[in-house]
Image (cartoon, rainbow, N blue to C red; front, side, top):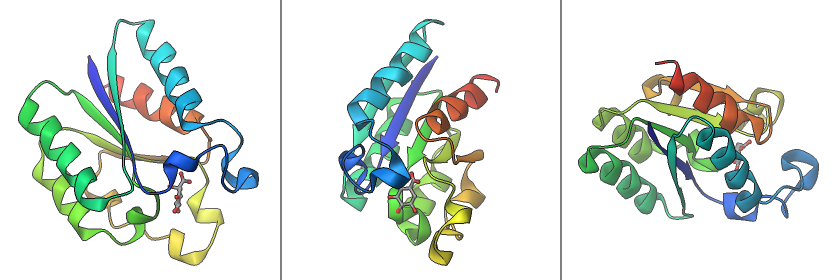
Amino acid sequence: MKFLVINGVNLNLTGKREQGVYGTETLEEINEKIKSFLEVNGDEVEFFQSNIEGELVNALHDAYLGGSCDGIILNAGAFTHYSYALRDAIAAIDIPVVEVHMSNVHARDEFRHKSVLSEVCRGVVCGFGAGSYIAALAGLKTL
Ligand code: DQA
């Protein structure tokens, strides 16, 4: 199977920013973990990160138009809580998307309790650090 892992705004600073919340592993290290998890079963994965909302929308469109992506993991960062553009892009594509957060967003600030993406996603995983990505991929693989 072929997967795409998309990380949004500020996720490039993972491992450096707010270490008490997001830990000390860098995004590159997390991506290596994901790769190792998928390689065992011969699955393929591509990674994309951007701080720009429109580039995330384009990545979703490209995965759809490319025609060979079986599932998408999306940690949109703070865009999760207000981006109707990302929501519409997820709704527009015929690929299962899993919303992921490293932290338990429900145990944090109130504005993080609301996601405008969840309703159009196949599932949601939060609270397991890098493990959230692995758990989400494991879920996608059962489909
Ligand atoms: C996050 C949670 C969001 O609320 C926050 O804005 C992020 C990271 C997470 O992975 O826990 O940037 O998506």
